[in-house]
Length: 111
Image 1 (cartoon, one colour):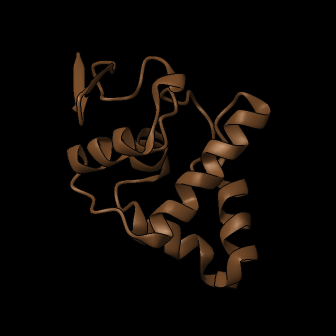
Image 2: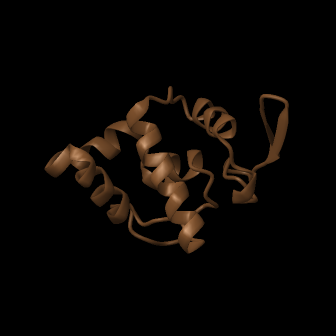
């Protein structure tokens, strides 16, 4: 399958996750978010950019715990976990990982 992000076509699997995380860009994130019914706002981008930086450094998607800790460090404190799931109401793996261009994570905690 493919999605169209501006003039660029990128391959996704049957569930809509990027086949190759290196194909990710901000326009791709916008297209993936739209497919999930999300309108990206500043807090979404805080999560997405953290996830991309973590992926670039470690070559794996960050577990939700790391993302929640990052949000807490950004001033959300104890409300960070709830905020993550407000931003991505269908779940960390289903939406946040997909929009951030991760391959579909297998069998780990969603928070």
